[in-house]
Structure formats: structure tokens, C-alpha cells
Image (cartoon, rainbow, N blue to C red):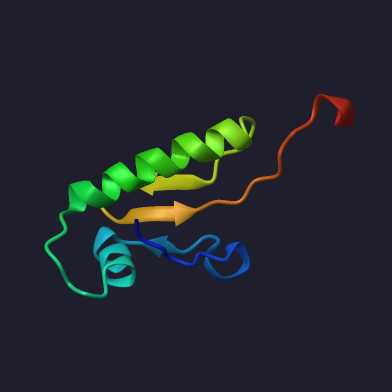
Length: 79
């Protein structure tokens, strides 16, 4: 697998293009397509949803890439 450090405080709100994610995650410059990144994002979203079903962390920005969007988990107890 690949490892890309995305600290919420450093990257929240910034848009990262697929190419930026490829450059950060595949430093050996092997042949990786945009669809590979889309697949990784889909799997990451699924895992985050399982852990935090009331939160959305990764937003698609049409024509630009992805944005890390940290939103607090809403709890029924707080309402």
C-alpha cells in the first residue's frame, strides 16, 4: 500500500489534485493512473464511514481533485 501523511490541521480545506496525490504517494514514479487514486479514495471513504458514520472527511472537487474536510461527529446525546 501507499502512505500519504495528511494531518488535518495542515491540509484541511486544501484541494489536492490526483497528480499531487500520485506524486506524494508514489515517489518511485511507477505508472499510476488517476483511476488508481479514485479507487484508493473510495476505499478510504468506506473505512472512514465505518468508523465515523456521521462524518464526511473527503470531498470531491469537480475538475480539481479532493479536499480534506474535517467535520465534527454529531451525537444524539448533544442534541
